[in-house]
Image (tube, rainbow, N blue to C red; front, side, top):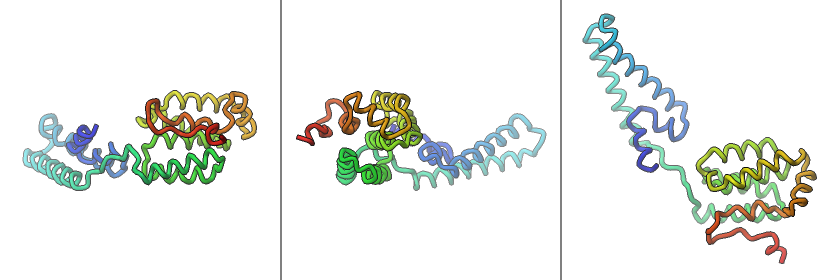
Amino acid sequence: MTSTRYLTLLWPGLPWLWLRGSVAGLVLALAFAVALDMAILLTWVWTELVATEFALGLWAATAGVWAVATLSAVTTFPPPLPTGRNEAAEALFVAARDAYLSRDWLAAETKLRGLLVVAPTDGEAQLLLATLLRRVDRRNESRAALEKLAQSDAGRPWQGVIRRELERLNETKATPAAGQAADQAAGLDDAPEAVVLRLPGEERETDSVANRAA
């Protein structure tokens, strides 16, 4: 993916459109497409509409736009989004997890949202935030976050947990007490979701609530 992303430099506006969803990138990409299409049509299809000199001038202008846009994109090429956590981000996640396990929902949400500002592709943090939103009965926000995560690359390792969270949203009633009762019935009273938020085989594991209580 790191090398493939540089292919977007071949089309003006595409780097910012494809890699960042920029509206300005979309406008530039469409404008270049229109100019290129007109140059092709006036040169080989509608040859009788304009003089040859005009068609050549259009080709020159299109080539100029491509050269300027490409050089500009090279100098301001958007860097890859971070996919891992540095020490500061890891410390922030641990603090958010501890606040979650302590049922300090406001502190946990604040720290998770801060973490996602610096590490927007952190699937584990997104999943913990979605779980938190369910537990405080913000069901629509939780569902939207889970569905967005399920469709992203960051959510691939967590598909099983995402499905279980969506099932809980479908099964529980729209009150915090009912949601907690459902967790208790399943033997999952004390924030079990945080316990499973580690991939199998990873050395770092989230402490279970039982261990914290011991």
